[in-house]
Amino acid sequence: MQEFHGSETNTVTGPADAVFGLITDVDRLPAWNRAIERVVEPASDLAPGTEWTVKMHPGRGMSWLSRSRVEEIDQNGHRFRYRTWNADGNPSYSDWTWEVVPLDSSTQVTVTWEVHLETLDRKLLAGPIRKRQLRKEVAASLVALAEAARTDAT
Image (tube, one colour):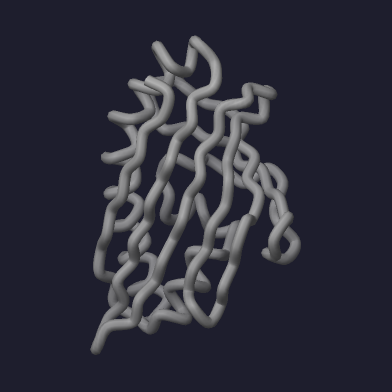
């Protein structure tokens, strides 16, 4: 396996600006993304080129540091794209895109990912494991995001 892709969509109660603000608040990522244990190096201000580091801990004892870099952030269009890679220097990477669309009384959030596996260990072992994990993790994160947005609104 050299790469894999996925996408998840969920409806979140709350205005699009507030939901997008929650998604792009790096310091709050662990509050709604259960795979992120903590933010190790926060991002000062999100703009293309800005980087941050989190400690990933999706379960089963696995944990690692993950770096991310903003590729695109469009506050008005509610689109956020960034690239992540393992801080250990492995050249494999993932591209993430978040799109927030206002609906009548709620907001639709869609996240897509493209994972590019560059080394043999990632292609044969880690990649297939992460492919199975990500579908569940992202779906759970979108549910937790919806709950965080509801909590923020009250």
